Image (cartoon, rainbow, N blue to C red; front, side, top):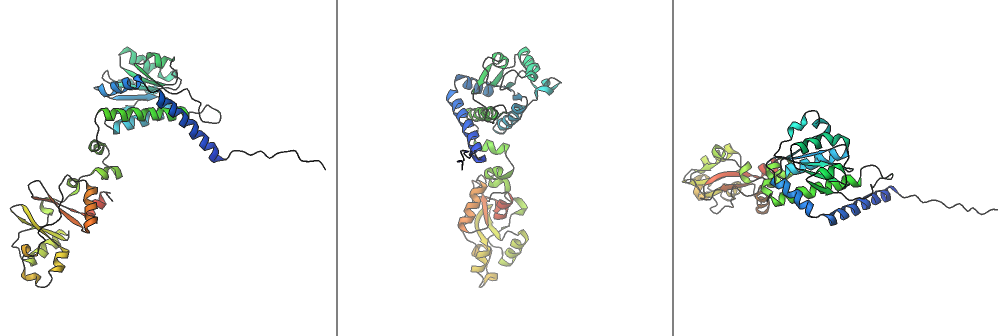
Length: 326
């Protein structure tokens, strides 16, 4: 018998292929982070100092990344939008003014579809930031500032599909957006202005945004008979009433107070039944904080007082839930 000299070939698993892609891109990102210098600061200064918008342009995969960079900038306080280079040459150049700053993305720096855009920017002396891997390219040489992407291999198996280069471009865009928002002093409150919807918006909503006011408030005088108080509480539907004198909150009557004073309740008035030191909140408290307070105190509603102690609103736990603060 002849010995079988064939050895079984072990092929990498899909997970191993994926891990290698991530490592290749991580190495490139580290290289890019280590090489950021004065040009990055100059690019940020251009963006902060502009009286117009930051216009992003790029072709193909660079364009897809450019759209995302424009969206990130716009949501963090820097007015920005994407202009497609081919559409630019057919009229959309009119969207770009002398007050704007442009970011033009091309891995090679020689993308043919960018020629019309570059000619326009040069003709009208509109400053632009190049984002490219090629420092000797037309794009880099004509730019006001060139941000160089690392000369690193693409992570795909044939070394051609935009993978590492697009990841680095996206990271460079994020770096610019975050650096600029910090330079502008962009705060959480500003972030809420541009993100009013969804969970992000709910995290920054204030009590004043959802509280009930005016005729919706269950407000009663201290001398009101409890029979009439019950009618008011039922009509307003919050399970609570605020006892008010001269606009100032004197106490609160809750369903719990009704149960505790059930014996002889109808012989009492509002002032005799109310809890005189209720938990309150101010209109500027975050909605999430108000909900946490209600959870901690096991209560379903909170009176809202202004700086003078006036009863200006009421917030119910259902308001928090509807706003997505849970």
